[in-house]
Amino acid sequence: MTTTKQRDQAIDVRGLTKSYKTLRVLRGVDFSVARGSIFALLGSNGAGKTTVVKILSTLLKADAGTAEVNGLDVVTRAAEVRESISLTGQFAAVDEILTGRENLVLIARLRHLKDPGTIADDLLGRFSLTGAATRKVSEYSGGMRRRLDIAMSLIGNPPLIFLDEPTTGLDPQGRIEVWQAVKELAGQGTTVLLTTQHLDEAEHLADRIAILHQGRIIVNGTLTELKRLLPPATVEYVEKQPTLEDVFLTLVGDDGEHPAATPSPAPTSEDPR
Image 1 (spheres, rainbow, N blue to C red):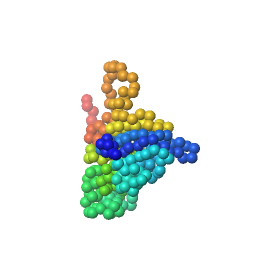
Image 2 (cartoon, one colour):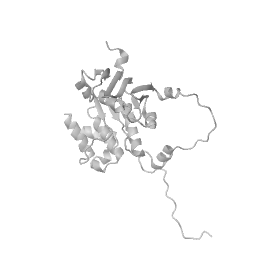
Image 3 (cartoon, rainbow, N blue to C red):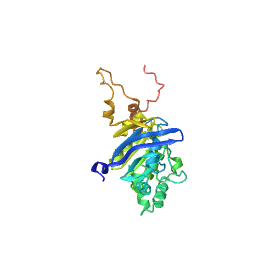
Image 4 (cartoon, rainbow, N blue to C red):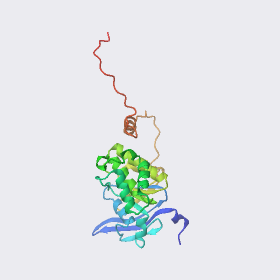
């Protein structure tokens, strides 16, 4: 019997284990993800994050344990699970020969959707790519490619999207662009599970954070709950200095238009005396 709590979960994982010969990658993983939330699976390289995503997306079978995605068992109802999710890997899977719009139209046609042109145009607007719609993807920046990749993943309106290391290899501006896109996804009701090894990324994006270490979830909670695990901070007067992110965004801006950059006055040969 399915409970109300279970219906509110987009993902429910219990006792997941996986080994590759003698290497135990997952050693009993348990967590759940609420619908419409951003859940970050945080861990270093080799912690098992990608293995979890592969199991949940039916690309890999666990040795033991259970996993449900959108209320569907990933083993017995794998085909239905695949229809209800989208997976974006660590590197953008886009066709660089085609334009951004052509990439989106292609995927919409492969999914046998009506009016692929309208679908493509809507997603280009949603991810701020309309101005680059007719440019070949080979001319896109890393952040633009990643946003296009995520947009392609949303064709068909899947209720759940997996983002495996979504900002791998991106520069600071590209990371910020992807972060904004992910926040917009959740704001429109899409459930997002992202894996990352970047602490600031999990802190910036996630409603809940689970730390995966040596194949186990060692802590799972909101950022506030995780901070409570440490001793209370002592209060001291410290002059507030701008962070590097403050400096970067002030100089570059969210759209890269240099809002605060003021040109220096041109040198003059006149003697002020």
